[in-house]
Length: 162
Image 1 (cartoon, one colour):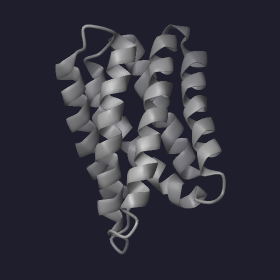
Image 2: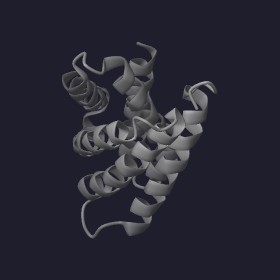
Image 3: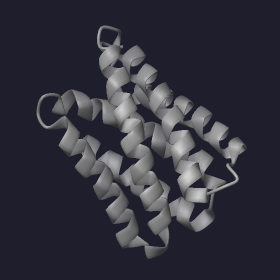
């Protein structure tokens, strides 16, 4: 339950702060909150594997977006972009995470995070901020999500799992 709360809190805070302060804060959010979400998602993958993983993750992603919108109606477009980006990134993450299942836990987590961060860093800014694409924001988000995911993997993965 702790990872569910962490995941939801991070996504809601990220969505609401972007809705208030705009694209520039999305890179800070990527480091602090989205890296956490990507890493917590892998912990939930382990907990929910063969126990409704797909529908539970879909419900969690939808809940984060719905709560963001409920807390700030002006965050609607951000919440929708977040939903689409996390759904796509989660799909890529589950494939990569499974493909890396025989690797050490931190390699598995961070390897899948790189792929998910790439997908999320293209889809979210494109849908949230529109065109022309903000390539510096996209690149900054990708780097921040990857670094943030690594830092969170140090916190959320015990040394015996590493």
